[in-house]
Image (cartoon, rainbow, N blue to C red):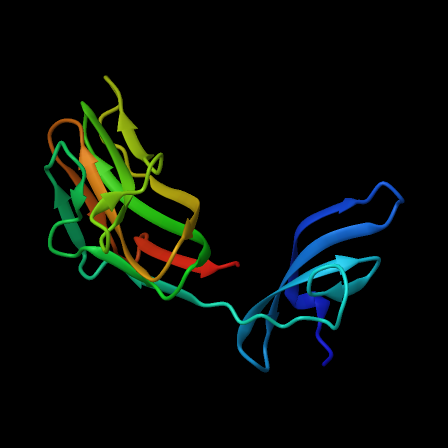
Length: 188
């Protein structure tokens, strides 16, 4: 099966001690409509270090905040009120998780998010990320924070984006000035 490397993105590359070029290519197969991770050895794309080219289907998905805005008031991590952002990761594997969170807050304010494994009722360790911070004299902040994580699961799970505000309130927005999205790409 032929594929177009113009539709690919090199994930990792290097060289073996003997000078053999190695790497991995993440490729979108426009016919099969799947992502494929191919191992490269001296220009040959293989599954492992030998064998025929491998076409491994990957899954992906994305959700968008359901309404125009959600107001955060909790000082502990909790689901985003009214419109919880939930992803269904379909199987065991490694996932690239991404989120673009558009927040608005005023001084003094600090807003952050974390990943929460809703299936196993536990926060994903070390997944906390800052969305925005306002300091004295600055007033409001209006960032769209691009966030990402790499996680491995032992099975299918529901993953939620939890948020908290350190003082006052913060608003997560979703409109034509900026969307709040939460998604994944399975990479292994």
